[in-house]
Length: 117
Image (cartoon, rainbow, N blue to C red; front, side, top):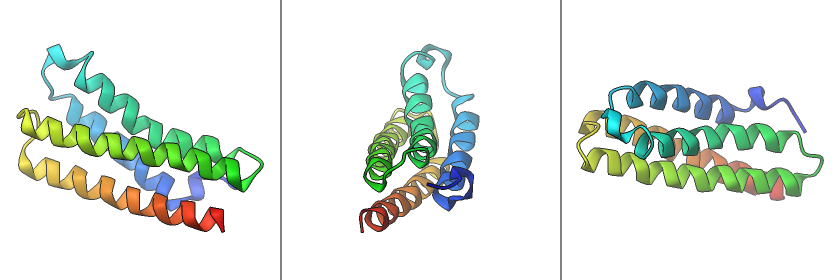
Protein backbone atom coordinates (compact mmCIF):
# COMPACT_ATOMS: atom_id res chain seq x y z
CA UNK A 1 0.00 0.00 0.00
CA UNK A 2 1.46 3.38 1.00
CA UNK A 3 3.03 5.27 3.88
CA UNK A 4 0.22 5.90 6.37
CA UNK A 5 1.82 9.20 7.45
CA UNK A 6 1.05 10.61 4.00
CA UNK A 7 -2.70 10.04 4.40
CA UNK A 8 -4.48 13.22 5.45
CA UNK A 9 -7.05 11.19 7.39
CA UNK A 10 -4.24 9.61 9.41
CA UNK A 11 -2.67 13.04 10.04
CA UNK A 12 -5.99 14.46 11.22
CA UNK A 13 -6.78 11.45 13.39
CA UNK A 14 -3.31 11.55 14.96
CA UNK A 15 -3.74 15.26 15.75
CA UNK A 16 -7.19 14.45 17.16
CA UNK A 17 -5.69 11.88 19.55
CA UNK A 18 -3.12 14.41 20.76
CA UNK A 19 -5.95 16.88 21.42
CA UNK A 20 -8.05 14.28 23.23
CA UNK A 21 -5.13 13.35 25.48
CA UNK A 22 -4.77 17.02 26.40
CA UNK A 23 -8.47 17.24 27.22
CA UNK A 24 -8.42 14.07 29.32
CA UNK A 25 -5.85 15.51 31.71
CA UNK A 26 -8.63 17.63 33.23
CA UNK A 27 -11.05 14.72 33.81
CA UNK A 28 -11.73 13.59 37.39
CA UNK A 29 -9.14 11.12 38.70
CA UNK A 30 -11.83 8.55 39.49
CA UNK A 31 -12.56 8.33 35.74
CA UNK A 32 -9.00 7.14 34.96
CA UNK A 33 -10.08 3.52 34.48
CA UNK A 34 -13.48 4.29 33.02
CA UNK A 35 -14.24 7.06 30.56
CA UNK A 36 -10.63 8.25 30.26
CA UNK A 37 -9.44 4.74 29.46
CA UNK A 38 -12.23 4.19 26.93
CA UNK A 39 -11.57 7.50 25.18
CA UNK A 40 -7.84 6.81 24.99
CA UNK A 41 -8.38 3.32 23.59
CA UNK A 42 -11.07 4.30 21.08
CA UNK A 43 -9.34 7.46 19.85
CA UNK A 44 -5.94 5.78 19.41
CA UNK A 45 -7.66 2.94 17.58
CA UNK A 46 -8.48 5.27 14.68
CA UNK A 47 -4.95 6.19 13.49
CA UNK A 48 -3.62 2.80 14.63
CA UNK A 49 -6.01 0.89 12.37
CA UNK A 50 -5.33 3.24 9.47
CA UNK A 51 -1.60 2.61 9.92
CA UNK A 52 -2.03 -1.14 10.25
CA UNK A 53 -4.30 -1.28 7.23
CA UNK A 54 -1.74 0.40 5.00
CA UNK A 55 0.61 -2.48 5.78
CA UNK A 56 -1.76 -5.05 4.32
CA UNK A 57 -1.32 -6.42 0.84
CA UNK A 58 -4.85 -6.18 -0.50
CA UNK A 59 -7.32 -3.34 -0.86
CA UNK A 60 -9.95 -5.55 0.77
CA UNK A 61 -7.81 -5.90 3.89
CA UNK A 62 -7.06 -2.17 3.92
CA UNK A 63 -10.79 -1.40 3.68
CA UNK A 64 -11.48 -3.74 6.62
CA UNK A 65 -9.05 -1.84 8.83
CA UNK A 66 -10.56 1.45 7.70
CA UNK A 67 -13.98 0.13 8.73
CA UNK A 68 -12.62 -0.68 12.18
CA UNK A 69 -11.25 2.87 12.39
CA UNK A 70 -14.67 4.18 11.36
CA UNK A 71 -16.35 2.13 14.08
CA UNK A 72 -13.93 3.54 16.63
CA UNK A 73 -14.68 7.07 15.43
CA UNK A 74 -18.39 6.49 16.09
CA UNK A 75 -17.50 5.23 19.56
CA UNK A 76 -15.39 8.33 20.22
CA UNK A 77 -18.21 10.56 19.00
CA UNK A 78 -20.51 9.09 21.64
CA UNK A 79 -17.88 9.21 24.40
CA UNK A 80 -17.31 12.91 23.71
CA UNK A 81 -21.06 13.52 23.99
CA UNK A 82 -21.15 11.58 27.24
CA UNK A 83 -18.20 13.59 28.56
CA UNK A 84 -20.10 16.81 27.84
CA UNK A 85 -23.31 15.56 29.40
CA UNK A 86 -21.44 14.48 32.55
CA UNK A 87 -19.89 17.96 32.79
CA UNK A 88 -16.30 16.84 32.14
CA UNK A 89 -15.93 19.09 29.08
CA UNK A 90 -17.67 22.35 28.24
CA UNK A 91 -19.80 23.00 25.17
CA UNK A 92 -17.02 24.81 23.32
CA UNK A 93 -14.58 21.91 23.70
CA UNK A 94 -17.32 19.44 22.83
CA UNK A 95 -18.05 21.34 19.60
CA UNK A 96 -14.37 21.39 18.65
CA UNK A 97 -13.86 17.66 19.24
CA UNK A 98 -17.19 16.80 17.65
CA UNK A 99 -16.36 18.77 14.51
CA UNK A 100 -12.98 17.06 14.24
CA UNK A 101 -14.33 13.54 14.70
CA UNK A 102 -17.11 14.16 12.17
CA UNK A 103 -14.54 15.36 9.65
CA UNK A 104 -12.47 12.22 10.28
CA UNK A 105 -15.56 10.03 9.87
CA UNK A 106 -16.40 11.65 6.53
CA UNK A 107 -12.83 11.19 5.32
CA UNK A 108 -12.82 7.53 6.36
CA UNK A 109 -16.11 6.88 4.56
CA UNK A 110 -14.74 8.52 1.43
CA UNK A 111 -11.50 6.53 1.60
CA UNK A 112 -13.35 3.25 2.19
CA UNK A 113 -15.45 3.88 -0.92
CA UNK A 114 -12.35 4.75 -2.94
CA UNK A 115 -10.44 1.66 -1.80
CA UNK A 116 -13.39 -0.63 -2.55
CA UNK A 117 -13.68 0.59 -6.16
